[in-house]
Structure formats: C-alpha cells, structure tokens
Image (cartoon, rainbow, N blue to C red; front, side, top):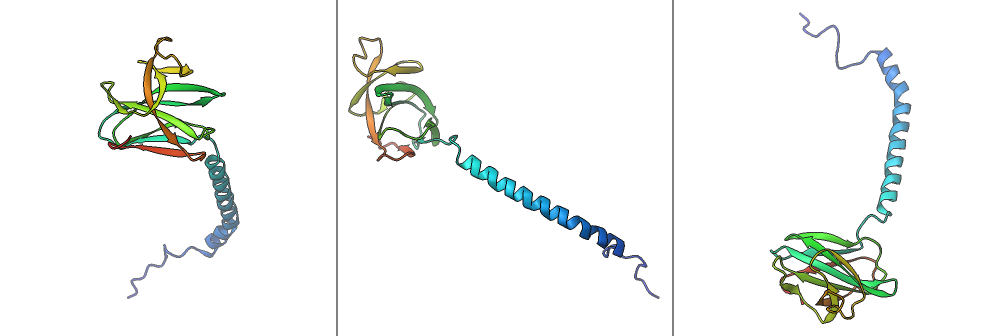
Length: 166
C-alpha cells in the first residue's frame, strides 16, 4: 500500500513554476530600486544639518541647568537655559561650529554654580538671549563666570560634564 499523497504540496506545478519565473525579474528590479532608493535617502539624511554640532552630556547624578556663550555676528552672546538630566545629552548648537571657543556655565536645580570658570558673562533667571557681556548688573542681568571650552576649531564637539569639571 502506497501512503504517499497523490498530490504534493511542496512541489509547485510546472504552470506555477513558469508564473514564478515571470515574477522574478519584476521583483528583483523592485528590490534593486528599493535598495538604491534607501541608500540615496540614507546619504541625504546623513549629510543634512539636522544633527547637533555642539552637545553637552551630563555625566553627573544631578539635573543641571546650562547656559552657553559664543560670538554671534562679531558680538558676544549668551543663551540659556537648557535643562540636562543625569546621564543625558542635549544638543546645544545645531549648526557647524564657527567659533573655536564656546563658553559654558552650569548650575544645579537650586541655582548653585557647578561649572564655574573665569570668563564673566551675563545670565538671567529665566530663559534668555543676551547680547554683550559688559555691565551685566547695570543692564539688569546677573554676572556669571563661564568656563572656556576650546573646540580646537572642529566643526563638531561634545563636552562631558562630570562631577570633576572645572
């Protein structure tokens, strides 16, 4: 007695084989086009300016508030605040760096300086963008000492804020 099925489900008929072969060129062309389109899209996205050029990573166990200073149109400018959680990074400057030196000032959530340098610039209690670094008090701002970060004229830079930062 032969127990083999008279009809095999694993083997397509010759008619089905022919229809598969007709589909293969269309499928392979579509696959090649999809791969080419995907590669082109990846190139466009990787060269776009959406990625950050100056990033600050908070490697402390505390939340910090950060202010940044830099030259903008040949004038000193400070901007703030960015809140950076513990062990998180924030994109501060989103275009390629035009300045060799970037200035940073950071406080804890109580307003105590945790990143304190030697370059005096202006900050405010709330969000701010301040042109000029002279006479902070007379102009209604707060004078703070920023740390100078030398980016070595690179177009991208990441600063790691640690518990041992200057």
